[in-house]
Length: 238
Image 1 (tube, rainbow, N blue to C red):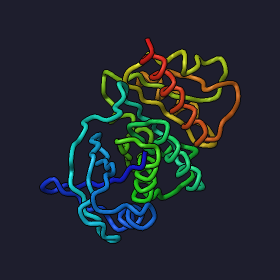
Image 2 (image 1 turned 120 degrees about the horizontal axis):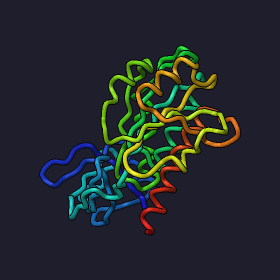
Image 3 (image 1 turned 180 degrees about the vertical axis):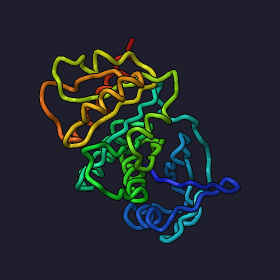
C-alpha cells in the first residue's frame, strides 16, 4: 500500500507537500482522476482522487475516510536512553514505528552520553517509517529528560511498568506482560546504575529481562517492540 501524509485538510481538499507531490506525480506517475491513500498520522486513512497533478503541490479531493485505521488495543510507550551515535537511535525509531509503538520518550541516565537529540529529525524519520509500513499513526516523540523527572511524570494507574536489563533470572518481558497499556524503560549502553534500578522499583516498575544475552540499546528497544506486537497478534487470534 502506497501511503502519503498530511497534517491538514481544508474543504475536503488536501495539498501534498513538495516531497510527496514529486513522489506521487513524478516518481509514481499518478495523474488526475487516479486515487491514492493519505493519512493524517492520527489514525485517519483517506481515499483521495487527484484533481491537480502538480509535481510541486499535488491537490487531492477526499472521497472517503476510515477512522482509527489499524489502531491497537494496547498503548506501548518505550522510554529509552539515546545512544552516542544518533544514527543508531534513528534506526531504532524507524524500526519501532514499523513494528508498532505509540510513544517514545528519551531519558538521561547516569551512564547516558551527553548528547543533544534532534527531535525534528526524529519526527521526519517516524513519519517516513509510518508511510513505508502502511500505518496511520505517528508515535508521540518526547524530549530528553532526566530519568528521575520522567518517572515523576508517569503517574497513570492503568499502566504496566517495566525496567528491562540484563540479569537472566529476571522474569522475561514476554511472561511478565499481561496485555494492555505498557511502559518499558530501556537503559543506555552502560546499563542502569544500582541507584536508578532501586528508584524505578520504588515507583512500581517491575524488573524484567529481554533474554540471557546483552543487547545494544537500540536492539533492546526493537526486541521490546516485537514482544508487545507478538502479544497483540496472539491475543487477537483468541
